Image 1: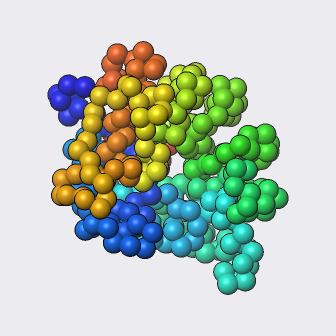
Image 2: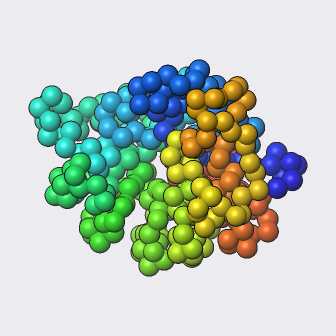
Length: 310
């Protein structure tokens, strides 16, 4: 991609896990290199990042995400409980389900300038060892009450659970404004059913692993798409079907040999969003990267930042 075009692109990363210790050089509790958070932020700005939405995965995550978001005018956050962590609602250490929901509610109420969505919430049947189905379903629905009360969009998770997910969404669709199913890796039919409900679909590296993934992405109308990285996860890897379409590369070093001005091998970061765009554009035969980027940017602004100037 020509440098002049890169300078014109605008991105909003709808799902980034910036509170993860790896952005401070800490991996599995061990400091492997110096804190490079500021470098990560700088690289994202250089490729055209205008805003990032930090994902809140439970009360603790959401609290930390809000704290971090207040350090920059470009950072915002979601508040919610990930399906694999929904047993926390019933943990006596958290005060029980009513108290847990109230903690989430209070975080939203007291930080309306930074909280732009309820989530990450939904269903994940790939990891039932963390939380059983019935518990996930119960507290997914509980969190919809927060979206209804605060008139916020929802940041949604659906993994190997489409039928139950769709049933809950359909039954409650009148209660919330809209939302996005992030990190989508489902079929064309699943994508169509989400779009039919007026929802959006978030695409990242995990959405582009296989030819089937890419075909599903291509079937989604551009006016229902958003873009994300899910950093530090979901990097587009050489084994992924979309890898061949990447045009923008970054200097990388292994974490043990990291040097300043380098990305870390195996650690996705927000700047890699440009690679997601490149794969999406080529697969969709979008010769005008700018037009696709603008559509994604405008979709995201409409949903999460309706009062901002574009």
